[in-house]
Image (spheres, rainbow, N blue to C red):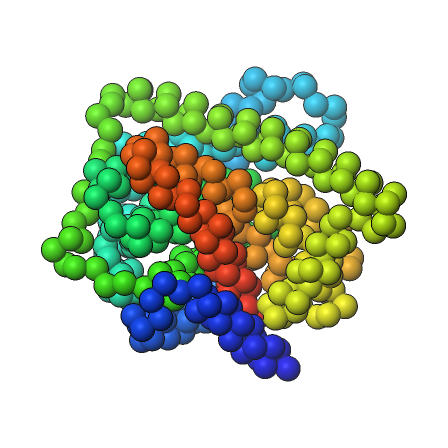
Amino acid sequence: MKYLIALLGLVVVFGLALLVSSNRKSIKLKPLAVMLVLQLVLGFILLNTSFGYIIIRGVASVFEKLLGYAAIGINFVFGGLANEGAQPFFINVLLPIVFISALIGILQFTKILPLLMRGIGFVLSKINGMGQLESYNAVASAAIGQSEVFITVKKQIGKLPANRLYTLCASAMSTVSMSIVGAYMTMVEPKYVVTAIVLNLFGGFMIVSIINPYTVDPNEDILEIVEEKQTFFEMLGEYILDGFKVAIIVGAMLIGYNALIGMVNDIFLMVLGISFQEILGYIFAPFAFIMGVPWAEAVSAGSIMATKLITNEFVAMLSLPEYTKEFSERTLGIVSVFLISFANFSSIGIIAGAVKGLDDRQGSVAASFGLKLLYGATLVSVLTAIVVSVII
């Protein structure tokens, strides 16, 4: 039965992507089929094999170590602030982003990260049938962040046609930054975080190649990566401050969104006798169902999905423990991988603002297809969840 539901889910996802396609005749079916098979194979390896378990445990242990090192700095500044046994979210989950951001800066400065991003991007371009710039951008978005990535390709931003710019922006919204992966792993099982990151990379190319198909002229597919000329300590200071800004911004958004959701839920309960999140749950329940969630759990799963869409993934992840007893292990896995992306309304402004800061005209272009970006990125999350539902 789960295979039939997954097949239905794939038909719905690809059908919804086809519905808004800018050029249906240019869709390349072979790369789509190859990437779908790769998703299934990689997902199976990561979630169902001993080799995958070793990879997951290896990645998880690295981040556990990094979080431990981050705690040294955090305790030096904030030690004694919390009560004995307390686990403040800002201190334990968000502040480690500062340390991980600093490490990313060091890897960037030493040219290790750019080399990896170029290499992986080149290999991906041979699989997805798209340009090297698009493939590099997808990998770089996951490595250094959805807004920072545009700085590395700022020489090309002003020259890109709207269709290629859409692909770059869609990649930035479909992935997650490595600087916050450690934070995710404190709220979601590491195996689902790692699997989602890998599958979203291919899923992003699949959905974009349906919504926004085109062929890149090899003469125009020139990858010029801009590297800022800074001293080591200038770079380190910048990345540390950037990490702290991310932690503060996420913390502020969590305070505001959680408070607003609580208020709106109470208003709906008083007026209609049902909370706002429950209403959203019923709206999103069909999507949860085609992702492989049993109908008995689909409304609750739909509520978490909607929360992520209208707020952000952190708010949704924080609500997951409320459903631990209600959800089966399989549903928890499906919902977890859905949450691992930047597909939410606030990302539209972040991405459009990042592009506008580099090129005013292109920033307006990026803003004009904001809702289409969110539409595509959400389909990527649904596609990843469907693939995982077949495996677990």
